[in-house]
Length: 316
Ligand code: SF4
Image (cartoon, rainbow, N blue to C red):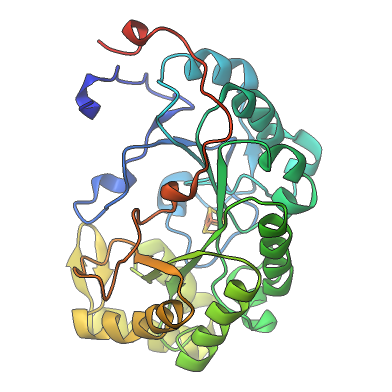
């Protein structure tokens, strides 16, 4: 069904077609985004979303569940819902507000297809009871193994070891897991041995798919990296300013540089027999992309038969 057949969501909708900045390089299948919070307490230096939502703590969305119930009825159940595309769905605030949990308790029994993207670990320590029963896959982000570097770069997010442990818990409970090694930032987390070790660790923990991507600079995140990482930040800033190529509002490194950054991840994933893909790099061929989707939607299992409103209410 062409995506143009769907009703256009209203401004400010909770559920809206995922269309990251209308990128021509985005290869994601048609899906909806759902963000229970706005802002993000994890405050990663490289965050792409801050250009749109600002650098603030996670704030729960008003009347979240009521609005979700109303809006979910407008979309057919086979369209995947990606939770956490622009604000992490498992920030520390989730322990108290439980908005992500409420969304899962509502959507999972309806057989909705759900993909969760997060740097949190609460999906594994609290929500496996529901995730393991539903049409749900998770794609946590783990960018490095070094805890000190992670604390600098992703100051409020759980440390890498905790995220790896969460992968193990989820995969042991039967929840399909792909890992996002994204972004790879030159001079920061680009050590080839470290990247290969990271792939090995998540493969040992049960991940079956890897998606990776190089850092694409935007004015606000590049300025943050420059300000917060001292001389290292200055090197990154100079590299992107001198050799960055403007692509759709981002500074991309030249193709050969990006290939060099991604190669260790792809090589290790291939060696471990994992599916792999890249995100918005534009590289073609099985040597770069051997998975059925770039975002992990193909991992979503069919455990619950979908229920939903009549087809004619979904189509214009
Ligand atoms: S977890 Fe994601 S949304 Fe939150 S600050 Fe980090 S990159 Fe941004």
